[in-house]
Length: 201
Image 1 (cartoon, helix red, strand yellow):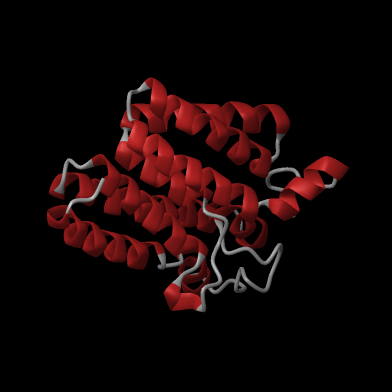
Image 2 (cartoon, rainbow, N blue to C red):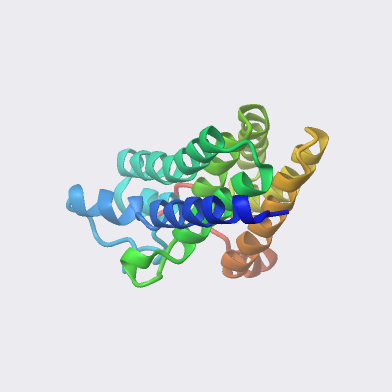
């Protein structure tokens, strides 16, 4: 899958993607806007959903944008540098892992949904748009952000397979597994009916 010629560029791309993913938009936005640290307020998660609870719509939108871009840009740049699908998939995975375990913030990151969506848009605008539509439809129906994310990323590898992108589908299977792990508390609350409604303080 990775020849000697491709191994070093793939490693460099992965390291840079991980570093980009390690920049926490939630923490930086909250600091800039004088809000509580999202790691110590609300659910304690440095992500857009918790920033919405802590600070409202504008900081949440900025966080969502920042987290999405740090997934999108590394994958876009990787695809400009190489046409090798496994390397592009590795860039997406590295940016996502950077968000989960950021080197700049004591390896305490968010749950990764926005970064994963951004990476997916970098991989394929059409598949990314389909994933966004899926997320929106489930969100409007069930009003639970975690359920929307989990259901969407169960479907994303299938969308990529239908788009004939097997290597990228494999990468997003790994991302989906991590998402289920980071949302294990949400899954428990979904099962017992205590998961908060989107936007609820």
